[in-house]
Structures are given as structure tokens and as C-alpha cells.
Amino acid sequence: MKRIVDRYDKRLIAGLPRAVFPGHIEVVSSQRDAERAVRYLAKQPLLGFDTETRPSFTKGRQHSVALLQVSSPEVCFLFRLNRIGLPDCLVNLLKDDAITKVGLSWHDDLRSLSQRQRFQPGTFVELQNVAGQMGIEDMSLQKLYANIFGQKISKGQRLTNWEAASLSEAQQQYAATDAWACIQLYEEMLRMQREGYDLTHVATEEKVN
Image (cartoon, rainbow, N blue to C red; front, side):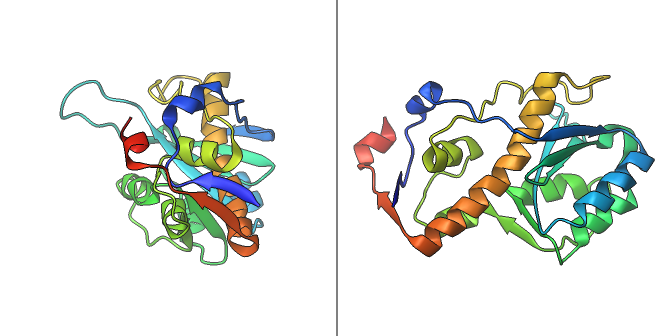
């Protein structure tokens, strides 16, 4: 039976082995490639989603969402929305009720995406809700992954330029890992709920430190 805690000590994360998306990554920068990618994704029963936005270091200025990551267990597509916008094929995927789509803090991502084009989202699973049902208090992807899998998701690329002329290999790996990790967490959390798990409540003073 897997043992987890209700709140993970962030000081332990640095010493964990790094989690890296093991599959194939494709960067999508054209309408044609987007349509081809969606044809593949529409056949998958479960997808992980995430977005990235160019950081703004000027007060009051905010950029539009630049990247939409959609991952199956084997392939992750990185849609460069700053180049192709939010094409109809992607909107249709987001609206699809037949495919289970998993994300974390997904309401924020949906709000950012709807600023490019308004749509009614289909079937989405919010990992924060699943974690809360299990008694887990941590809501960040990094802490959840460390708690459930004992591995570290690096956040070193989070504040890089997601509108750069080309995405670096490090940016691509970071973006793909975040979307793929949502699938991994969802499937494992469902398994734990079915088969049981041991939740330890960390003392209040330990949570504060």
C-alpha cells in the first residue's frame, strides 16, 4: 500500500530523482500540423493538458497564452498559439465530451485560452479536486508528483520566453513533462483510490517550517 502525506515538505524535493517525459515531442507551428496532431489526439481516451505564457516583468502587463501542451502517454504536441492562434481543430478538441482531459489549476488555463477564442469546454478533470478528495492539501504539480511518485518535476524553465523564435530542447522537455505528468498522476490516484493508500497527517508545526 502506497504511503503519502497530506502536505509534502518542499525542502525534500531537491534531492529527488528527476521526472522526464519519456515519449516523443512535436512542436506544432502551422494550421496543417495542428489538424494532423488533433486527428491523432482525438483517438486517445485520456489526454494531459497544460499551457505556458511568456512571463511579464512589467507591472500591469500580461501576455496572451503562447503554448498549449496536449499529451498522450506516448506523444506530446506543443501548439505554438502565439503563431497559429487557437484554430478550430483545437477548439473542437477542447469542447469534446468523449475524451477525458486532465489538467491542474485548469480553470486558469481555460480562462487564458478563452481570451484567444471563446468556447464551452468538454469533459475535464481537475487534479486539485482529486487530490482534495484523497486528503492531500498540496495543490502544485511539483509537490503532488513528489508526494505520489517520489520524483522531482523541474521548474527551471517556467519563466523563460515562450514566444521565442524557436523553443529550446529544455523548454520542450519541461512543457511536455508537465502535460504528461497530469496523466500519470490521474491514473495513479485512481488506482490508489481503488486499491487503498496510507495517508499520514503531517504535524502543524512541520507544515509551517
